[in-house]
Length: 231
Image (cartoon, helix red, strand yellow):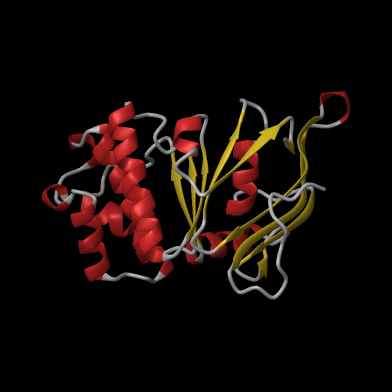
């Protein structure tokens, strides 16, 4: 079992602890062992980059932490709750209340305006705060675009809307899977800078999957996955 850092029982700063996570897809000769006993810990307010080659298990690990899937074995403690083996309904409730997700694909709702896309997750979680959403729009440079629709925006603007949607609900943990992968370097750097600034302001933990060593260097810590293990 390899820990990125030692867990600290009783330490209120610890937001996330994942212990000995395994995940296999397929059976028998077709089985693919994607995660082979991965353990890590993340404190509140910390940023962590997760790197590794394609197929190393990065996205699978993030999906388990997000509650989008369940591990075959192991434990995931998120803000004091063991989410590893919750039902689909239970994991969905955790995603609404505690976790925010940003993906490479913007996943905006085309029929909703920028304003309504930003407020979407907050409304689902019952955490609508008009003043906070207005501040997010201002700081993300979207105030003038609030009445527009996603198809009327540039890629960088769409990703900023996705960031706003995630942070509007003030999640305790923000997970980002290659959030700048569809953007040019300059735009991607600007989006990541905004994310880091806003996440720091909310005190959330931040875990980002990235192939970029340059972007990973901007995080507090980095771990590297190789063949389903921490290298």
